[in-house]
Length: 334
Ligand SMILES: NC(=O)c1ccc[n+]([C@@H]2O[C@H](COP(=O)([O-])OP(=O)(O)OC[C@H]3O[C@@H](n4cnc5c(N)ncnc54)[C@H](O)[C@@H]3O)[C@@H](O)[C@H]2O)c1
Ligand SMILES: O[C@H]1[C@H](O)[C@@H](O)[C@H](O)[C@@H](O)[C@H]1O
Image (cartoon, rainbow, N blue to C red; front, side, top):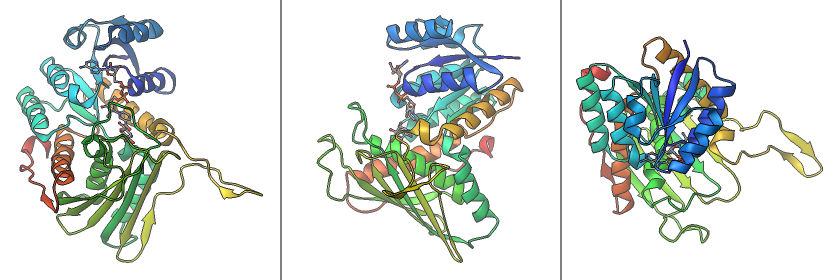
């Protein structure tokens, strides 16, 4: 069976997903698209010999669409995720599930009313081979109990629609989700430190910033978010345990040595750095949909990350620590 996918918002991320679905991934095909930018929808539909729908709802309701991928901007996600749930269709939604926890609660309510887990959130780092090896080392007790994690999330630059809160709910959300998964526990508080700002940022941004997060057991996670670092897409992670340290390796498989020194090429964007992780993530989703199964991060994971982001956004505009107030996990997501 080929899973016929309808994609809402085929911009940069969506087109990259189409490319991998139609080249390296098996079992699926993007057959329909919709976009608030109708010209974009038409252009992508022509490229894939598919259908351009006039609205998200029309695409979701189409009998030719088995499952839905949402790759529009975060603030647009919620109504389309809920419409896909109500249509009984599996839906893969790029992160963030929604920019605020309240919106994620509405999605969880709709999913529980449907009585079936249908939503997968695109937290692709969980599929990255290096992060998975870090998790195996931690889970096998090879560095003892985790005490601290030092993260850095650097982008060369960001687009002009990137708002001040996105440093937390669009960028740091990756570390927030990955650390919940790596450490297997929730965060209880967050603080934001605000260093000297780079002159190369948009005026409205605090860039860089450092999130200081604390988990239930007291593990301290710091996350440097620097989205106008100019030089590369640089993702760092070092976990300090009781008996050892484990850190993400270099991004490239080869290291060059010559008269200029010993060095690696740096990746410049998420598709280069996490290309293999995206492929595994989307392949697993398509295979699961074909077998009428849920896979990957749930709406609960989308909610849990959003609660921490809400507290982080609050901490960005305040001084001091903000508590993370998370609802009890519904049995449905156990
Ligand atoms: N996992 C990752 O590392 C990663 C990387 C990049 C982007 N993303 C996520 O993917 C999503 C899209 O990001 P992007 O960089 O591709 O943005 P983009 O601007 O390139 O594309 C977004 C597309 O959505 C369309 N759109 C906006 N609002 C819409 C609506 N209400 N209905 C239908 N279409 C709508 C836009 O016209 C555009 O074509 C975001 O949620 C972003 O956080 C994730
Ligand atoms: O939407 C993008 C994407 O999630 C990237 O992986 C991240 O590095 C960027 O900061 C973010 O804006």
